[in-house]
Each structure stands twice: as C-alpha cells, then as structure tokens.
Length: 199
Image 1 (cartoon, rainbow, N blue to C red):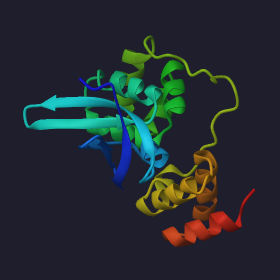
Image 2: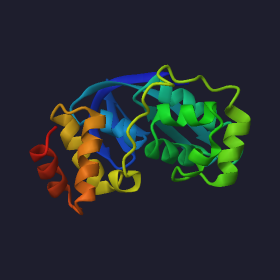
Image 3: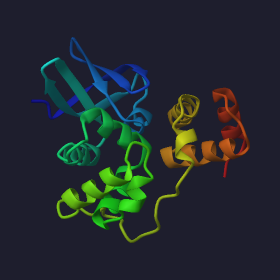
Image 4: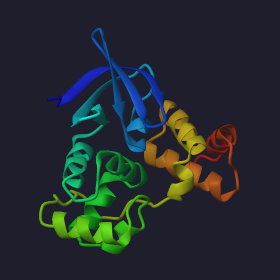
C-alpha cells in the first residue's frame, strides 16, 4: 500500500519516527540505523511497509531501499516477525547482514542480537539463493564496534547529536565506541569525548 513517504521529521524516540506529510502525521517503527539518519526538522524520504494484523496496523519505515528490501526478505523466514526483524536491523548494518547471508556465514548471524543459532541457520537456508550480494563485498569490511553498548539509549542519543553536527554515521559510531572503551556511560560524556578526540 505504501512505497515511500516524504515529509518532515517532527518527533523521534527510541524505535519510533513521526513524519509529517501534508496534514497527516505518520508514526513509523524504525531501526536504530534509520533513526540515526533522521533528525527532527529534516525533510526526508522514508520507504515504508504496512503490516496488517487482526489487532491493528503498524507502519515500518526505512531510510534506504536496501534496508526495506532485506526487511521484506527476512520476514519471509519462519519465526521472524516484523518486530524481531526491526530489532535485528538495529544491531547490524544492511551490508554486513547481506554479506553474512550471501556467504552462508550462519555463525556470524548467530552473534547478532535477536538471532540465535537455529534462526541463523534457517535464514541462510531460505535466503542464501535469494539475497543480492552487497556491491562492496570483497572490499575492506566495515569496522565493527561494540554494538550492545553503541546502541544503548545513551550512546544512540550521542550518535544522533554527532550526526546532526555533520559527522558521518560510521565516524560517529567509531568515536562513541572509543568512549565506551574508556568506561564512559552518559550521553554528555560520550559527546564531549567524541568532539575532543577527532581523528
């Protein structure tokens, strides 16, 4: 029903984005990666998927078409619902997820928060022949960061602030990861450390 929605981000909280398009405000469930790409006041294009269930409707949003495509592929796998799918996409990049599936790396998938060993094996079995290999597969892999900490509420807030200041998402994540290694925990501490310790 929905392909994409263009509008202004008027509110954002953990896992939720409110997008004003015309006189309508759309509430979308989003991954942490999409949330980082969207700041309040930005005019954005969000790809959308409407989940229809007996107990109601839920709208999911994605900042890139690639994220939407892999989301739609994951929900075809038995045992993976939309909420779990969104959680998975909050803890691993689309590129890394697609690479793991395409190469049949079930062990790597099993390490992603929200995916266990059996689910990882099922994902590989059902999607390996369907997944489109990432364009940059074979090049230097994305730098991995301490995901459980980076995607905590405090770290996410700090990353969002850094991105709003014009710092690239990967760079912001890298700086926050270093702050985590130093034992910092609060949003303000993360931000101060990241701004003082530029590459």
